[in-house]
Image (cartoon, rainbow, N blue to C red; front, side):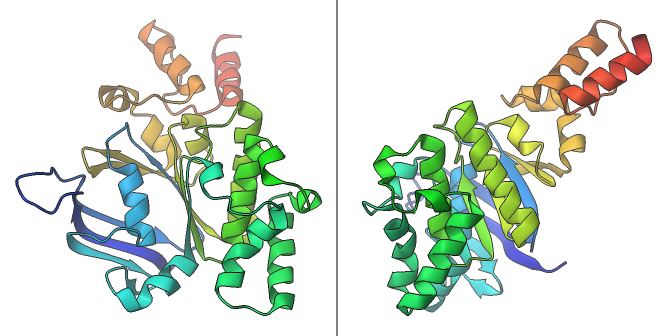
Amino acid sequence: MDNIIEIKDVSFRYSSEEESGDYVIKNLSLTIEKGSFTAVLGHNGSGKSTLAKLINGLIKPESGSVEVLGMSTSDEDKETEIRRNVGLVFQNPDNQLVATIVEEDVAFGPENLGMPPEEIRRRVDDALKRVDMYDYRSHAPHKLSGGQKQRVAIAGIIAMEPQCIVLDEPTAMLDPKGRDEVMDAIISLNKNSGITIVLITHFMDEAVRAGRVVVMDNGGIIMDDTPRKVFSNVSELKSIGLDVPQATELAFRMNGMGYEMPRDILTKEEFIKAFMEKYA
């Protein structure tokens, strides 16, 4: 599978003056394959959000390189093409909604690209259907729930027809119902539309649904594997201030109490099955 994103030995700090800023990203290298679903974890200050902005080209590396589809994010002539191919969704959907009607908001990106009205109409309808918000196309965004607003924000990115969407803690401000709505939309975009997903999250049960988990700490990557393998390192994750899925935590504690449980359990269904097979 080809890579859509290639990050090579990147370092970044928000102040370029040597004496006034520590590096937020340090000598980081990472590749993201086309069509993959990668979750990025890390405590506050680990560099997750900075990584998202580097991928999208909102900020440029101080050293090293970030390439999207072979285009360097440091090449100003490629900025528009890079941001068309890599959409960025932020934590607060209110910061991304710009119009008073849902369909007008979703049309904002394609209109800025100068597309003909019939193509804009097609893209808007398609994007809203893909996040299950088509029936709300005539609604006012400010009257929607948090989960619905975030899905409209995602639709606005989809209307640009990107190959990759980077989501920076998109469910952090939502209730459980809203989080489920947004996660279902994200997973559908990956599985059914082949869109590459990079999900930055602090919800471990969301990361479980990815195909790959990258764990950041102190501006670098300390783990990079499948969810099952990453979350089996309970003690290591706790040592850097991260949690693990609830079922994984319970299995870990039971092992500490003398019960023999698999250390790579991820879901409550897996926990119940393993416990029943061993102790029922």
